[in-house]
Amino acid sequence: MVSLQTTLGDHSFTNVFMNASGVHCMTAAELDEVAASPAGTLVTKTGTLEPRTGNPEPRFAVLELGTINSMGLPNKGIDYYLDYAAAFQARHPGQTMFLSVAGMKPADFPLLAEKIQASGFTGLTEFNLSCPNVPGKPQIAYDFETTQEILTAIFKGFKKAAGVKLPPYFDLAQFDQMAALLNQYPLTFINSINSLGNGLWIDPATDTAAIRPKGGFGGIGGQYAKPIALANVRAFRQRLRADIGIIGTGGVTSGRDAYDLILCGANLVSLGSILATEGISAFTRLTAELEAEMAKQGYATPAAFRGQLKTL
Ligand SMILES: Cc1cc2nc3c(=O)[nH]c(=O)nc-3n(C[C@H](O)[C@H](O)[C@H](O)COP(=O)(O)O)c2cc1C
Image (cartoon, rainbow, N blue to C red; front, side, top):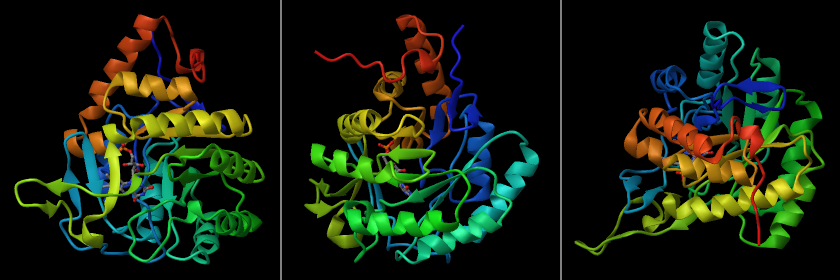
């Protein structure tokens, strides 16, 4: 009998799958659909201090092997998602959900942290340090000094369970430096990876970029992202404190993809592009595929093969 039960910090989940922030989680109705699916947990759209309308449309497109988006963080604001979380906690006692938040400037992060600390939220907070799609704003976690300042400011007063959503890194020295930095803070988890920043897709019928914002530049997800996601999860698992868990995100379209992220060290696995293109039924399909793959390999739980990648 195969179980997909998993843990992150003190929190337990019946299934490793969850949605990735930004997909199927803007409204209470969408979040309720994830909660009612086989997914083990759910995360909100990244909320900012004030609601945002985001970038001009079209700002999302489906590509041959994934997606491109430059949404610009449209969201209903932190208060909306805190209200949703309060209602969720009342309806699902004992279950844990995630709240994703981001500042539009570094000084917003401690303000968001104070708001969540003062609220009745008992779940896990994901500080998004990696949105590549707000014109004029760099991805915070590519700037190690600013990342350090933000985390220091957050954890001055924040005592609840928290993690960070990271962009993909491509250099071993970056993994070393970022892991050493993260290991200084009381993090419960990291989520790796956010979209591959600033790709470009051209429609061959019209020689035109696929999306409008930023001259067509946007974050890439889906199958294009899988090798990068595997490497990031693996590299951080080898470098982070053992008590910091990992949400593996990027390129999951099959049960085997999720299995591979767990082999690299993931505790939970989140679905972005595939959830956007296939819809909520992706959770049912991928749960069945992962269970079948584990049965084939002779593993009863994710813990039995987590981090057990073999190398030559
Ligand atoms: C339409 C769309 C919106 C997204 N919005 C967010 C967001 O608000 N916050 C965030 O942390 N990541 C956001 N992401 C990134 C995803 O959470 C995920 O990290 C990325 O798409 C890689 O996963 P995938 O290969 O499964 O798509 C978004 C992705 C898509 C496709």
